[in-house]
Amino acid sequence: MKQALILTGTPGTGKTTIADLLVEKDYNVVNIGELVKEKKLFDFFDEERDSYVVNDGKLNVVLTKLIEKNTSSYPLVIDGHVARLPPLLVSKCIVFRCSIRNLRQRLVVRCYSDSKIDENVEAELMEVILTDMMQLYGKDLVSVVFTDVSIEETFSEVLAILAG
Image (cartoon, rainbow, N blue to C red; front, side, top):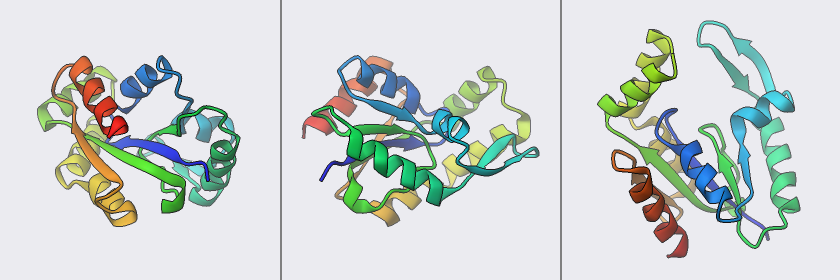
């Protein structure tokens, strides 16, 4: 059975940066945010939160098909913080974390609103994504990578996790 590698974490923790580097290593990558917009896999756009409310059922159907169609010898990489696939479809889940100071700075650079920055900082403080992924996939499939170091160091750690 073909499987996927999930790169997840609070927005601004480095998922897409690492996913882009994996593309250079011949991994096929799907960006959840782009996929949701392109295939209209959302229920509505939440103006207050400035984000789409993803339809998990529709997203999982599309992701499952993409996993099945993946022709790479590597698992399909799923880049996003809303992927919740069945555990049988997941080879590894890497949760990216970073310090609150760095996260806040990264989100300011992205021109996030104050309320969106506060919401994401709170999610990081409360370990929302890590907790969700641990409940869904367990400690055997979930690894945590802290991204307060250089991109090169972060990428080396990810490659070591994938090799191990």
